[in-house]
Amino acid sequence: MPPQALFGVSVVFSFVAWAITVRRYVWPQLRQSSKVDALRAILTLHTFRFVGLAFLIPGVVSPDLPADFAQPAAYGDLATAILALLAIAALPGKVGMFFVWAFNILGTIDLLNAFYQGNRTGLDAGLQGAAYFIPTVLVPLLLITHGLVFRLLLRRETATGSGVVTRAA
Image (cartoon, rainbow, N blue to C red):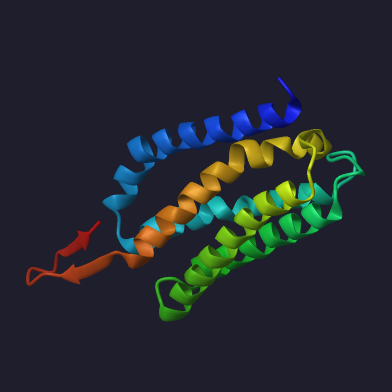
């Protein structure tokens, strides 16, 4: 099987495996948490996005890895990780929610742009070296959790007369 096909199969299988994992084990827990606690859990995962800087390190990736792919992917991940940290620090206030929205919009666009740039530049999957596992293992999970953040941000919470918070999930 050609390397590009193996890359594609890896990404698809990762999306399927993470979707099953998140639907079965993660979402049931997050759904029962307060919005802020659920957001903090996902934001904490995304603080590890600094790992995208690996796309800039020769020896980890091929020196022939296109800069049009590597630089936006690396710095977009770093900016997303910083926004995740700022959101964690500022939650539960309005500033925290602003950072969550900024994190989620930028982070989603960053990941989708990386896929686009990879296709646009005709990126050979082998040029990613050890960083191959970022788009094949981590990115599907990160995109799925960005979807969860949008779902949480749009979830309404209302206080009942007894002080109990109910959620429309």
